[in-house]
Amino acid sequence: MRRKIVAGNWKMNKTPSEAVELVNMLKPLVANDDVDVVFCVPAIDIIPAIEAAKGSNISIGAENMYYEESGAYTGEISPAMLTDVGVKYVVIGHSERREYFAETDQTVNKKVLKALEHGITPIMCCGETLEQREQSVTVDFIRQQVKIGLLGVTADQAKTIVIAYEPIWAIGTGKTATTEQAQEVCGKIRECIAEIYDQATADAIRIQYGGSVNAKTAPDLFAQPDIDGGLVGGASLKADFGAIVNYNK
Ligand code: PGA
Image (cartoon, rainbow, N blue to C red; front, side):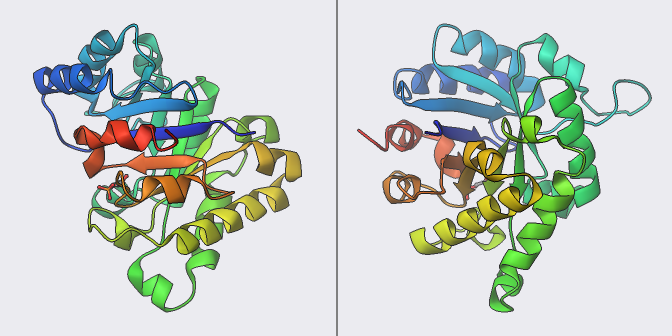
């Protein structure tokens, strides 16, 4: 049985002092022994959030990192900087980074490999636009994102990573994909993993759904056979996140 993983993606929200307040507010609400709980926060919030989360079941993750070890890359954060303060997860290739910061499947692949080398679990994002969905190329497009993102990743490494399926048209729009749509694509992603590696790897890898997940939609989504939790934006900044994490209570 795969363990569920519910991650908040704070995006560019919350100052360091607000981050401490939010972690303290959510700490009691996100207690659930059945679920891995991750808050992916802005780089400057990582250290205070880790301090505030001490003694709770919350892991703190980053929203991005660079694929080089160190050097002349002004403004970037290295994997060693993240592990040094106890970061265990990093979101890689979110559609907003692809859209606004020129991330490609190739840079996503480099970051995934580098995170794994440092023992950080990548939450690798994929997802189609509305136009692609309307043109019926969703599955082809997602398969390409997943295949390129995982180039050079071994089966043993792949078993540890998290893939987040986030249809772009559902992000921040209040338009959650239907349970059927989300399950269909997550199932196709698992089939693709089985093709690249083998069934054991496909059975081990965790696949999240993301895109306007809320306390109402989470229980049905997370009950699907190929959906192992969620990547949650807007609702991760509110008390609702506690209900999403406790979708099974
Ligand atoms: P949303 O964001 O839940 O606000 O739609 C999800 C995401 O972008 O990870």
